[in-house]
Length: 567
Image (cartoon, one colour):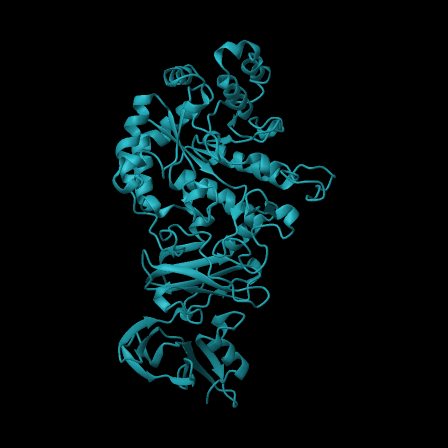
């Protein structure tokens, strides 16, 4: 008596080419012999094992050694006189003689509920970060990590890491129907374990190993592994700020003076070996300096995980993780906590306009254009060599909207400065004729991005406990910082890029010539009250061959400083 798998199924399992639900063939099941008698069988794939024994945990009984079905590690045991499922673990003996005990991952029920799947597919699961990714949890009385990832066109998805020798056959995930989500509970995994996803793509091609789109921590670059992280450990001490201070600091009638900071270069030269400060070191120095200089807010250039230092964080591969360059996620929380306790608001640059094409990231995540548009006329930024999010896909917009709320709720960020809004609004942004596709009405407005931005701002203002948004928008798009109910985009503030350009050009003139350029000072007053403008001096003005602010001023060194102080 035995339930024998078809040879092609066996070969697909041991070769890593199996497609479908592994729970259908692995784990504990009820079968039926040729005479119609029911029986139980347990099947597992353990390529690393010389032998596998089954220990029944409720009776502590060793049920014996499993039969090797295939030489590459497929094992099975049948139970003729057992009809009820029972708890068990495996005792595995390796080829070097070492033994260890482990749970059977395929005996566990799903973790995600049907409502989670429905809401994400609908684009309305605003706390999806509590479900997808790697969640430390206790499931069916066993501690471990629940993994879940969205890859609707994948043929197979596996969790791989040091814990399974990066072998995609050993921890194949369960597809959850038409939702496109794959999930798996792995007992015994713990914080800081490294993992990635091994994906067989839509065309049956094995993809490069992928980092977790919902990864909460990552290895230090150039490594790209995701890390299991306990998000619930840090104890905040800024409740007064979050409940009262944030609302006062962000309101339209409040004085706002913003100090822009790039973590990788702030006071870097003052340290040994020209290294950067950590989050904890920054927490000791930055609040005091900002208070002394009279600023009300700090704006960090993007701090979500990114692979290339030279991008300053604007090409993100880990939207849900503070970069590991400067410390752990808890260290970043400590920095924000210290700023809040000093009465300083925190703005973070947020980048929903594009993402890099790194093979381990979101690009062609499941072998198809999943997060991006398939057509390069809509899906690629040629200037930046990056991909453009498909805002019209509900799961993608949900990914980004939940991310905005994640930074506000999880990390107590007070405001998001949304990068490159103009590139999102226009389908022909930096494109020549024939390189873009008009919208359904024949226009150049990106209707899906407009709807996304409006919903983003509605959510931030309704869910963010006083948080606000800043738009880096460099065109004459109307009502960027007006409410959505009157047709605006709903941002709290808009950067006045025209003012910055005009006034810098004015200040660069020799004082004797400035009387011919006063219009550059006054022109912005013609439109100054059409938006809630912030007057910026952006990092973009001192990079790409542009000189520092001091060197934009005319005259000798004393005059340069005098002009800059005046400005």
